[in-house]
Image (spheres, rainbow, N blue to C red):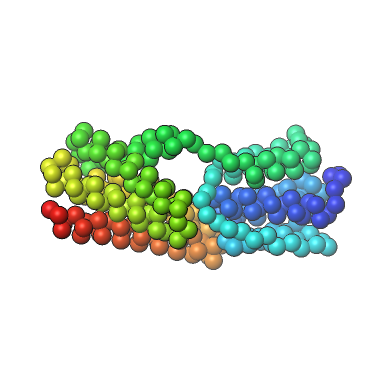
Length: 250
């Protein structure tokens, strides 16, 4: 039996759910993990998760946790899942679980800018295999993908306007790709654009939205799908504007 108050257990369960949801976990995983921890703590709880809040209830207490979904960090999701399994298997105590949740919640792990840029460039290259492009276009997709990713990251750090970062990133990609195409450097500017846009595509939201809808979590699924669609519209708008601007000069 966990020697802790009901309030403390409910609060910890809510924090766990908030960490999971804010970092990219689907609502079904959030609900299952929270209830899993509650049972392991000898306090059965019921959890209902939406994209804006988490409701955790025990027999005598209910708490609501506000959620602000933004950038995701799947490493934190994995760490919380590992902690919940270890706690249920009695490999760690409740106090240890609480300390580890504190660490995960406030820990700011991130890759270096060099690693991020190289990753963005590598992600931009595989579509070139599909299009059977030249080695020159492979290199262009790598470099332009990095440029678009850097532009989106710089804008996101200076502006809180939703979707503007991906729009600017796609605009930069379009400008560079069409310019290299007009100069005869790129074999096919459109294929280079498709490859370079891959780091900006909202893959996780799209995947999670489908999983949510399949699992009958319709509201959360539609919210995630709407977010992905708006991101796609912003990306497309940036590409179109970039093409129009390039045509003025070439």
